[in-house]
Length: 77
Image (cartoon, rainbow, N blue to C red):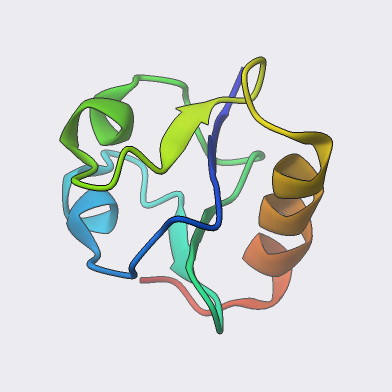
């Protein structure tokens, strides 16, 4: 189950710096996680200073969809 970033993200990039598989991407309004790349290690959840990252089982459907769509079009962080 991949992690998901919600709209409280401030685009600080801490998550991208610690992600072992480079699943983070910078979208226009926030960082997003590519669900096809995320290995669900949880490292980003623990490090996010905004607590903007959660497992997809705890995320809203809108956040899950936004992350998946934006990760496909956003450049890698």
